[in-house]
Image (cartoon, rainbow, N blue to C red; front, side, top):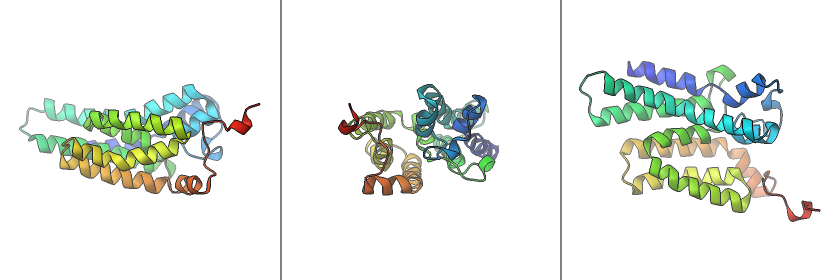
Length: 209
């Protein structure tokens, strides 16, 4: 039964929220415009903040809902499970949803960068670490204007926060695994940050008339 939950979590995680919302509103394929990414940042740039927020929310819930479902199954099954078994199952479902977003079966395994879905994973597993990361993310984006810089820094430090807060080994390993994949998926962003061509939400002074 647990394997079924993991498969379902992957399939739910594979749903391309931004692409679906764009098509429902009659917009063109967002993969062909902007950064080409299906995540909230590109949707916001192309279609506005409302659809960007809905994309973010959908990508977060893709992880949260399967994880809560498997937790509910453990609680309601009446069987005797250890806390570690329950924690491992919930963590695996979160990881599966995350992999679904990165490598969605519906889009020939070409998906997004996983930051929002990772947020959903750790909202369930490590909410305090998420709160710390959220403040850091907002600060980095506010002062730099680069969403990618905030995402990269937060994903790199999440493992440290969870370890310092006494999180379970399952959570520490999952945070490290997710962080590595987020950095790999942000390879182009890292390259643009280094050469100064990354797009920023902040307007340059020279642009202000």
